[in-house]
Amino acid sequence: MTENKIVNLDVIYCPSGKALEYASRAVNVYKGCTHECNYCFGPGCTFKTKEGYFAGANPKKNIINRVKKDIEKLSRLNDVPEILLSFIDDPYQHEEMELGLTREIIKMLIAHNLPFTILTKGGSRAVRDFDLMSSYPKSRFGTSLVFTEQASVDIWEPRAASVEERINTIAQAHEMEIKTWVSMEPVIVPKQAIDLVNRIHSIVDHWKVGKINHNKAVEKSVDWLKFRREVTSALTGVNADFYLKKSLTEL
Image (cartoon, rainbow, N blue to C red; front, side, top):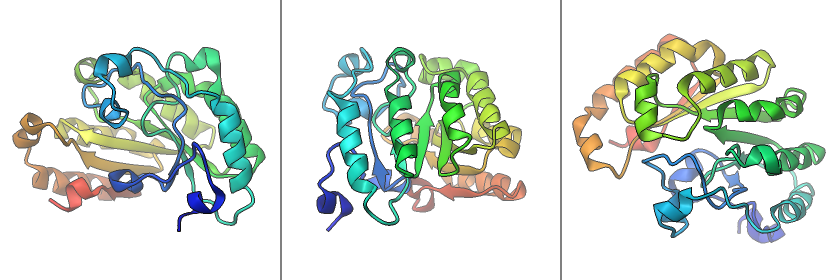
């Protein structure tokens, strides 16, 4: 029996499959995402067309009250695992700056002393909430970043924050003593992934690395065993704390 069944949670859930390599608890604030990443699995997971999924952030109905009820239930338990915001959407889309839903959820998590981590491509939009996270040791800030060249971002992640903006945001979090991590997945251009490690390892506390899936053209064009060796060497060489996902370890 899972904790979700024990406490009958609503929107905070237990991920399954590959998502478990990131977190054993998560909450998705929105039902869509405006970053329009070409490799996004969100449309498939939500049974929407890409056009429908990318049309707007689309907050979940009554999300704040629903999360509040879940948090109150979880706060009665011991050893609640870290809660991730978010898998299916991005917690710092453009609309978040007006709606402030992610910020309200962070406040509730802190008020109930629950651990959480952020995963976003929203760049500087997340800085607004660093005032909350910097004084809360049970929080971490994560950025999805796989490229060092903006031209690649423009092709694969056309409405996400730029490479430089995301790196600057990680640096700000690190400077404010917020624990940082990078989701270097899906790796598409191995050289850029290695370059990224060499460039920003000093401001990243943890790395998660995985290759692109469900894109046969890209997958066939890369020697993934070679990349696994090279990225392991690069991360080990700078004494990084890292996790290689099963997409790489089970080749």
